[in-house]
Amino acid sequence: MRVLLKLSGEALSGEGKKGYDPEISSHIAYEVKSLLESGHEVGIVIGAGNLVRGKEVRGISLKMADQMGMLATVMNAIYLKELLGKHGIKSTVVSHITNLPSVDDLKYEQVDTKLREGYVVIFGGGTSNPFFTTDTAAALRAAEIAADVLLKATKVDGVYDKDPKEFKDAKKFTKLTFDEAIEKDLKVMDVDAFALCKKTGIDIIVFNFFEKGSCLAALEGKKGTRITSG
Image 1 (cartoon, rainbow, N blue to C red):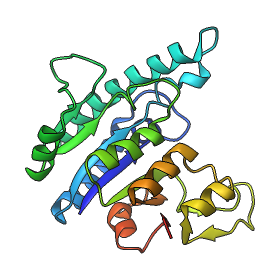
Image 2 (cartoon, rainbow, N blue to C red):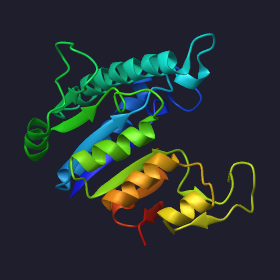
Image 3 (cartoon, rainbow, N blue to C red):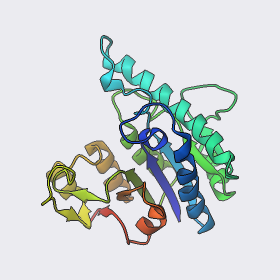
């Protein structure tokens, strides 16, 4: 199975923190390696909330702030490549927005070859355009690599009708359609991401990434919430 894993910047820093936390690296490596060893091909889109969020930058236009955020995702992609390499995992970073020596241009045939060879392909730079989030970038890259599923890594164990950290009576959904997710205005991903995955027929699984073994458990239907076309 070909999988696109969407990681937030907080996956590198810890919840509510900035920068990088080396102690988290072993968990990320374990989860990615478990997917590879189970025969899955893995692409990753990484966010940049641990460094900068475009919408949080004050005093400049959103299109400029978003470009700063896109560059920050490339920084995270390079960090993630080094992190995985220290755990014996082969990976490559690709992006449209930079010409750094350690970053390759995003070319479909090369990406497909790397995935088939067992490399983790890390996509930096978001969609390469402002005004779109890395959730939408994940949906776009999933479509481009013909992924079977998009794993949306979060800090909660699925999609709820309201914040389970604030409301004890929050109801968890085990399965939803894209139309239901949009209609209920569920904030777990952007409407653009839902719409693109619906159009391309790629299911999204929302799960708690910070539990050991959660990636495989999510793929096996044991964890998280699955969002489908119907």
